[in-house]
Image 1: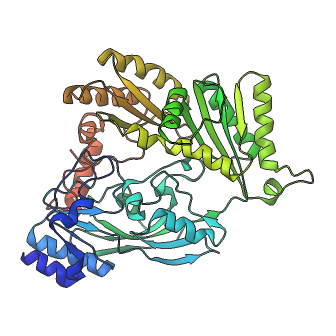
Image 2 (image 1 turned 90 degrees about the horizontal axis):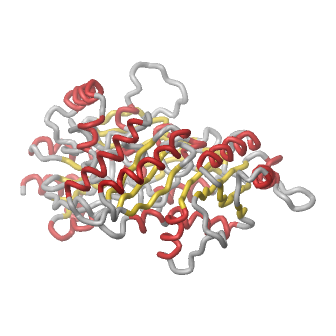
Length: 468
């Protein structure tokens, strides 16, 4: 009670939530890990976050930062902890169009940032399905990826500077907007992807990019993923590296998504095994301005490659979006995957990455090996094929904890065997602690533990996450 009273003095009693008021913070999107926090506190400034952290330190209480709570790995599980919600820190402090930099607080919702910079003819290119509720602090804390990593990189690549409240309550000001700074260790990169285990991100300087003046978007069916990789490379050559997204979905996944949503339909009349959503963005007027005949050059570049590959029988079918509605319909299929994949437990949600030229072999191998564990196994698969990130959701026929762990271990083992990683963009949280123990280089784990001990010797920041 003394701690709650002190928190009320810092942030206002109305922003210290207890009991049933904490229900909406109790679990991330998967609902797998559900905990009852001591309280949820909602500071509105960096100074208030600092005061909250100091008060919790004095009381010896663990802290779990939370943003939009759209994670998939239990990273905000907060049983008995003080959850610090950044939702009131939702100001876009400054947009500097000429420098292509935006200064945001951690509670800014991704879609709100998209709308704000769009007014300046700019984009913040981090795009994924939960952008309507995901907050920038969470995106940074998990090093979120999404569909546009191929062209722009993950969140780490989009961040120039950070403001962090350390476990001591001190404020670490790394809010540079510089593209070059060789003045010692790259400290900001320690906190991006650390999932709140080293401190609480409160603000950031982020990169902006010119908004494409035209898009060329198509759903393409190819005989194999080898042909898909050829398609990617040829379109990259034809457009000067302007491919923004390259998303693979097998036929059964598209069918499951289309059947789930009312009014949704596949762009193809026939059913194909290997389907790719490709999108190219053009910023240069020479590529985006319609010609006298109304054709848009970037669309023509894509159509020319598709036409050549159709003649070579390396493309089986293709539908090029002719307007924004058709483009949105194609993206709706891709972004509907998560809801369908996770709606029927039990499931094992995996997020692996392998080299681009190993994606096909990995997928060919994983199915039969999982069937050997459970003959009734089903799956949902989507892949950010442009960066090798495979979202493979295994759906076993029975809810057996031993079987679920065997599935996870097999998936990660095969990813490592192909020179990959067991975690590409969702983070570690609680659900991949066993994977870290099994697969992470032991020297790397030791270094990570030393960093954790140096910054958070009491182990109070998001305990039980990331590190075994």
